[in-house]
Image 1: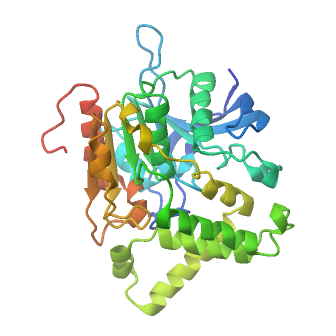
Image 2: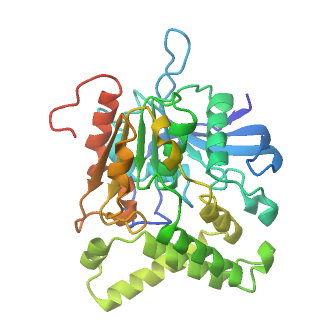
Image 3: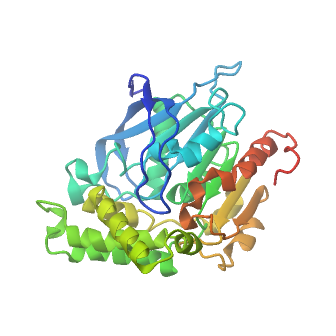
Length: 371
């Protein structure tokens, strides 16, 4: 076991980055711990190899062990492309879920928030290897999560995997690759199909925008290729936008233009060009569709009707649900209050579904009024 726990830290929430609508100012501080797990001799699906891969994580709550000594209350929450584990400390998520009597009450559950491979404080191209970093994909990311849990945290089974966007897709990979590892799955904002059509197109255009910037220099830039990043961040902004919400919040030309320009400018400051290329391209091999029947754990899968990335009129969900015996699907209706793709982290829209899934996967009857 290779594990370093940092001292207890009281983590304030921070303003959002990446896709979706902005978060409010932090209103609560949560007691967290942070640590790193060193995964020795990590071999990637491409055949590439690193002598060590670092996985960083944040946790809330404490592990509980059953009569056999097995941790039985661990919940892993998986972030989206370009994010990190700390995004789940923001009030629209944490304040709705982690408190007393709430669905993921940290007095009851051990919450694990990884920074995924290629993201946050985990191993990534910008650590030094740049474009020589192994070309990881979602299978590699899930394997790094699994080894982090088993080798670093002593978790051999999860009570729940909850994933948003990229993390949603990881939940489908988990369900197929390790069908009994999690007692329940809650994927939010994705489809269980190959990344193709418009979804692949805007990702490819973002990558192309970076690589077309002459200052990128094949990844060996002296400073960040700002024009290429502006192209990529503009596409990210549009992909994560919510039409009704933004129309209501920014009803004039001046307000709308100013907000978009500010968001893109601030977003660029948080990006590394090579990291973003890897993050966007890591979905290239994702395609759980042929083996959906392997997913047997109770699942509640939720998308949003105003999600640009996962269009509401795609015919995938009803076909997929018929092939997964314990899965349920819900489409959150579009309103002026929903947040497009980013609705996945506004728990008020779906926390009743989470409570119902936890009850269903324990053999309990959900509370009256739950989905």
